[in-house]
Each structure stands twice: as C-alpha cells, then as structure tokens.
Length: 139
Image 1 (tube, rainbow, N blue to C red):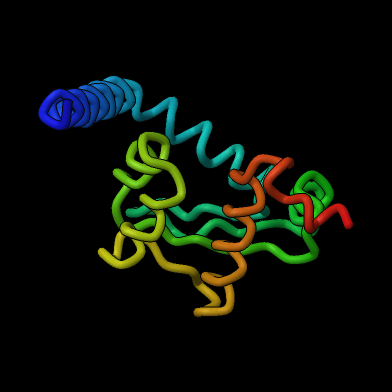
Image 2: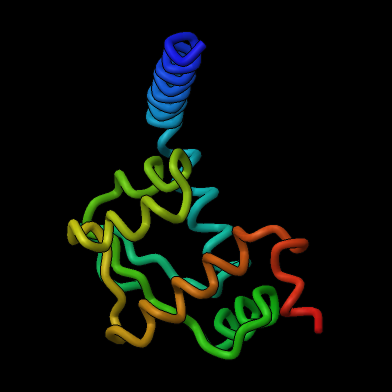
C-alpha cells in the first residue's frame, strides 16, 4: 500500500508541475494582455502605480490620484518600478509568492523605500486571501 501511495503522490506532483508549466507558456503567449490587466487591477484594487522599464516615471495628476484612491479604498499610492516585465506573467502563474521571489531577484522595487514594500505585501495578501479566511477583519 505504501508504494502505491508514493506512486500516486509522485504522479500528482508531476501533473501539477506540467499544468503550471503549460499555464505559464499560455500566459507568456498573451503577455501583453496579462500586463495590461495586471496594471489595471494593481491600480484599482491595490493603489499601486506601475512604472514600466525603459519608460520615464509616470506623472500622476491630482485628479488621477484621487480616482485611483477612491477605487482602491486606500489613503496613499505605492509607486512600483518594474525592472523585469516577466513578473506580470510569473505572478499571474504562481500568485503572490512570485512577487516576493521577483523582489529578491531585483525584478521590481518601490520608489519610496521599504515601508511601501511592507504596505504592498499587506495589500496583496488582503486582496488574494478569501473573505472566510479573514474573519478577524470583520470582528
């Protein structure tokens, strides 16, 4: 029985890895769309303004800042400078974990220092955690 369980486990892990690899390949085919969606949801859900590599830093007007803050519900914007655009497809593929790995690799940084990194991490966790797991927030 133990050998059978080991075989099932190895087969399950291999299937999941193959699925995630295939998913990443499909996301990379549509990387432009993934990037646009990622930027849209970052601004409107997280209050994160994305500055792409090879472009000058985006100037946000006061009107635009108020619009973004009203849609996300936070009181300050976070400016994220992307150094490697592959983070869009990787984070779509593996979720918040990819953002942490990408930060360690130097693929992105915040313009206002470490406080923004902590705040952004909290915002990502709150957005990606199901409501039933955040019961403490409702009390």
